[in-house]
Image 1 (spheres, helix red, strand yellow):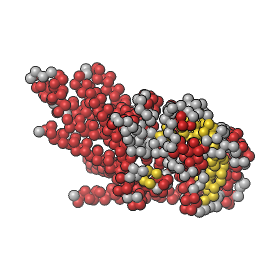
Image 2 (spheres, each protein chain N blue to C red):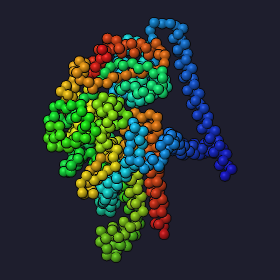
Image 3 (cartoon, rainbow over the protein chains, first blue to last red):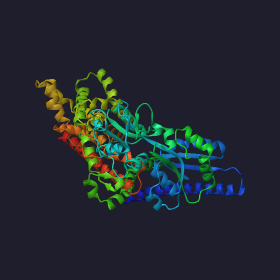
Length: 292
Length: 300
């Protein structure tokens, strides 16, 4: 038994050493990064260099990736890393400075601004949310009030809004999704989405579910609209980019990038690029709405 | 020379011990960190409220996972009801009836089932099973729900149960079969009265292992179960219609929401993980218990 204790201690010691070694390495990389930043300051070169980390919303992610490629072409010494994780993760990563820029596909919540008072919000684009049904649906238009009642579970049959006699099945995103938060904000107001709604964890999964299930209704980001689902006009206005730009279609949310406190030069340069004419041209090309 | 060999021996012994300890350490660490992250939820919400409330609305500060516990329980029960007879039939066929050359074809096929990624099962469920289930004419039935999930899950636990049960059946001593046949019993009587009772504990542990696998399945479930946070209920007078209801599993709750969760919401998801951890631990240790009892029983 005593012998065993001895052995066990040896192993614990070995483990401790191992962990200490790992910790040491981490510190080293830290100093290396410090050095490079001091070098930067000493050289005072006009071009920027270093890494730029973007973390957050999976809705903003594909857009940010395309923007990053163009920015890297302008500033070849800056490497931009784009990571997903969701809007809330984006805000938190920016606030604890684990990312240079956080991405959020919704308004920044009051609670978040209170918790992290130095958050700076930069709106980089806008995105519409369309109400869609399965392709065979004969309904062309609904009022915003009808949409709210359908998603709240008060209207449960298509014949109540002028369609066939068929149960309405609501499809929504999961709690915490930026698209859901924006939809709740702009359409549902204080009403809750019905509990029996089918919840799918991504825009793509919502689209597939709606396209194969008769009687379904749901909401999708503009970028996901195609012939698999049928876009429903709200108060007679079709969810198209033109209508959203002109302001006729009102279910439009901002896509944001957030920074915390003072921004570094390279971060500011990236944000400036995104809202520049070239940056906004990319936004439009990728199917989002410019900030105007 | 001898001394060197001995030294090598000791070194090997310690490195093997290290490998064993590392795996224990990993389990302990996962348990520890999951529990630590869940602590705020247990403190602020309370274990009682978590387990007994059925409303899950993190946006409104309501965290009850009862609906998910029931969802996980029902879908697992459904999978066991559908999958176990199939898996046992398969195991008996493979070990008692199939000729060696047929067995050489069927067994790898079943083992292949275990190698299919669960997202592929989910996709299959979404485009094939869900539309078929939708054909059942009950108001509100969309195909997404417990029945579709149970069917997918039944196929997924098939290889686990089949291989463990087959092993148990094969390890029933040959003399039992010979004795039974010598006394004039038919093949089926032998299987039914001698072999299955002889392999009973192995078969039970096979089922329990399948149960553990079913409880832990995530991505395929998310794709076909509908993920609504509701306690499944019957929609017609027929009690079986409960299986047409949508539901959410404990694993699905974590996977669907963790990307967006912060603060107490995140902690509540870790708490869901702790509860799942405990459930699976209970299931696995009962499987171990049954297995150990089984080997003792055979010696008697």
